[in-house]
Length: 95
Image (cartoon, rainbow, N blue to C red; front, side):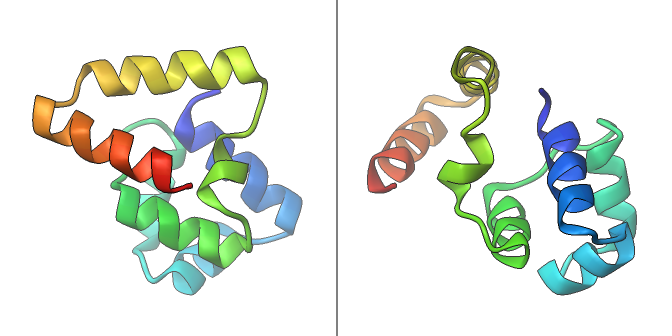
């Protein structure tokens, strides 16, 4: 499951419209819509704000079918610069 699909699934499970979640998370509805459609990426900061609005942790966000989540993380991590990979690993260890 892609990040945008996961956000949409969790948003719908919580009973929020895109406008409501965007407002609660402090991001634009347009950006949220584009992320859900897979037309835009999302920063860790914005994802964290969305998770806060949904009252879940980032760990819970990524805690879907283990294999699928691991593959998605691996693909995303492969695109990072070495410095960003370091930051990501440090962040994941802090969870």
